[in-house]
Image (cartoon, rainbow, N blue to C red; front, side):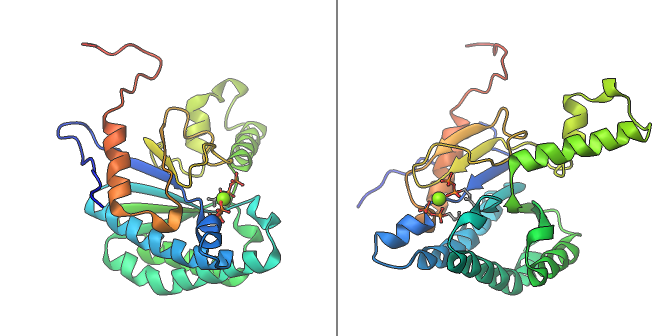
Length: 247
Ligand code: IPE
Ligand code: IPE
Ligand code: MG
């Protein structure tokens, strides 16, 4: 099959930060008569490919939604399989990430994650802390609303301690007290599997992100799909509520 793949548009600025809701592992598997966990296994391969593609395309920030705070509702066996794959990924991949210049970091509530995985997360962050070619953020037990509420609590504590006044609490303060304060907001948010919703991902940070929905299931996501999403992004006009010149 001859598929037309749009490539990066010369001269148009590339997204600095791409965030991805990796969706469709279960459906990918079910369509093949396989258990959902087989889809998650293939999903890990897609993560590897996508990190490599981001490196190849010189994207400085990539954020992946790995496990939501709502995903605990899934059958226990599926949650355990996901944790097992995560453990394997962290054990096997961190050294390669370190060599490739990737800094790995995690957002989300670690307190509810299995202790062995938390140890691997901390170790991965520590071992790659000196890298700056690509900042790879993985959201685990993550909820955008929880993150906003946690930020509000931190700001309230600052006010209670007399370090901030009520009037100091504005957009900039919220961004500064978020856990990703040193990471720019996503320019581009991609969701695979054809679903068109944000499912509680990065709610504060995506206020002005360009959204691209890809019909392909996550295990089938390829470098060309990332390139196509980037090209789509580059054809868009970001206005932030204003009016651009020469249009
Ligand atoms: C995304 O695929 C992976 C996680 C949420 C962990 P799903 O497991 O949501 O796959 P579908 O949406 O059921 O097909
Ligand atoms: C979002 O996908 C979470 C991740 C990709 C980790 P879900 O499959 O959990 O979201 P819903 O249930 O379709 O909204
Ligand atoms: Mg899903």
